[in-house]
Image (tube, rainbow, N blue to C red):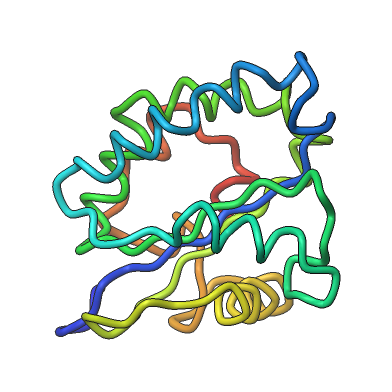
Length: 167
């Protein structure tokens, strides 16, 4: 249940099979502006870490994402679970999600975590990775969780989300 005065944050990240300029990931790269634009116009969208800041985080060898130049990630905040869930499963985002095995090193390399943030808070990558590590070590909790922890979230069950993504 969503705590009063809180929004939901999400971090997803993975390692691309090929370099960003490789033609085999061209559809993914070419679709980023479309997907991010749809997110920004979606009801309930609050904020997303900008492209320049995200690229700097992804490429920082001392940073929380490890500096792999093939890392692709998103950190965003949404008003509520329903808004995030509708964007993920009912927009063009879903088409990109369904093609993830073409673009990512292994589907297992995709990582995802959600957590509650006070309204107005803008999390950083270090915070998101700390939540992810907690989730990875301890499973679903109020501190960090996947879709299965959210009793109101149902679209991930019916829109083809693999069990791994529910983690």
